[in-house]
Image 1 (spheres, protein in one colour):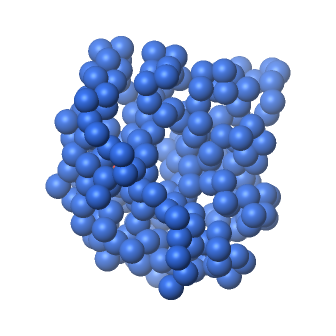
Image 2: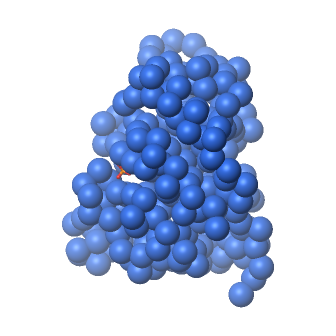
Length: 248
Ligand code: PGA
């Protein structure tokens, strides 16, 4: 097996949740924790980014694919840079569903994030019927292909991937460690067809009902490099226990 420099990463995706009190509680919990062997990122709603300034690594939950201009309600990469964002979640299934973000739009957003030196956390993952009808790997490959065609394999060296089966998001129905590992290995193998070094080193997170009680087993799978955490990232104690599972 090829050697790699992967470090575990846990990113908290608050979605449209949280308030100023939670910002303070999370800052305090993270400041007291010693998590030297992994990276933590918080992706709060836009208004809370500045409150987190200089206390945690920040990510946004979305970006515009445009630089600036008449795009009401959108936030540009330049603005996010001013607020010290380092990461951006792109292609989350909720944005694909709620905002009709196609694979092509997702690819443009990845490109836009990279252009600004933000690290895209590109989410891929299948709905339940796709898993059941046996076309899971084709589905994931198509999601990856859209971005590969837009930015090229070399850019994947500056990205993080997240495998988030849609049926496991917010449902309490976690993918088993074996199911997660199977898809993570597929993704890594798929990228390896184009560049073995990039494939070996890209961080691939698992997302979908990760909790303190299942994090360790998921994160110990060979190709699982941490998690993208929704619900459990809203409780500092639960979130910390997930981070500790990655801090081995
Ligand atoms: P969940 O969400 O942890 O609440 O399932 C994960 C995500 O949507 O990123």
